[in-house]
Image (cartoon, rainbow, N blue to C red):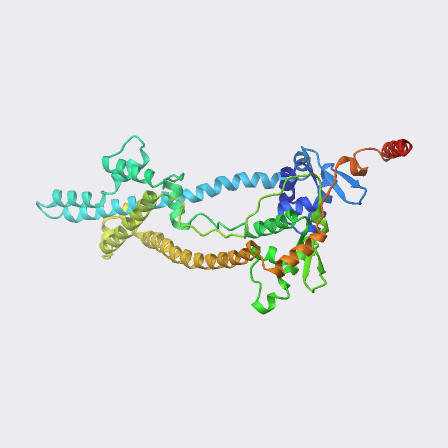
Length: 438
């Protein structure tokens, strides 16, 4: 069984001594999955099982258990190697879009100049002026590029723009190449780990209530609760019960509460964890690039597209490339690639902008629904309060310390029996002394 990275991270965060409930809460995992993963890890890394008098089990792992795993599993070594390689490859992919944009502008501009120069060279008296006007028209954005790549060169206008960005706190940590990729494709899904956060927060709420809750306390973290009339049956609690091995309990008034025995057992006494009052989805951002970087990327994209259209007009006469050959013929061969890239460079961010607006409206609606459910707990009515009071009857917390252990795989069984008998004798002596003192 391949080790679960999520379980390994949870073990490290929890101090290498954990219960199934600890890991299920920290990682938001299914209780059964957490139990199987812990058993497999303990067997593979030399971990130890500690059994309490109640029959509950604590898993104790060595601090170097990851090193032990790397030695045993070539697959883990391969995954770590590929993670590093992919980081480099993905960075190269990100910067390639900006590099291709600059190359495209340069190729198109130089080709236009070559064509115009060649055409004007046949005309007496206007050759020098026409060439000059063409160069001035097509090269006007390049000082901005030179400034961008030279940190020591700034005009007054650029300094003012930089200061305005500073004042508005819109600076970005992205360089130009990363900013172009961010302008095109954004910066990834801000809610990629939404399900993980959902189950972590639900488990934390259960833990903070000592393992016993009512449905109204869990509803602010769930979606798709069904129609209002079906919510009365609390069917939406079934996935929570299955994930954390919960058990329903019906009050004398016919109300249902839920308690989770596995989540009531801890390996250490830690304070209540803070948790948000409802599960909040984060809105999508158009780009993490600064406003100046976005304007620069958009401006270069427009320049590239317009220049490509002008070049297309010049190449409409098929004889131009045949006559000039060389660079002009090469650019004509890849012209549709350049035009397609220029079109996509502007179309993709535009479409993505409207898609983000539509997506964020749905996210805002879901957030409002969860927030409205959480407000029911701020001022609970009598019915909800009676359910909460009944649930507290099942609330309990078991903290397994070393004094509570009856068996551990860390030491020989015979030694443990001797130590255990000594503890029992000491306990009997203490009770006898207390009885004789009375």
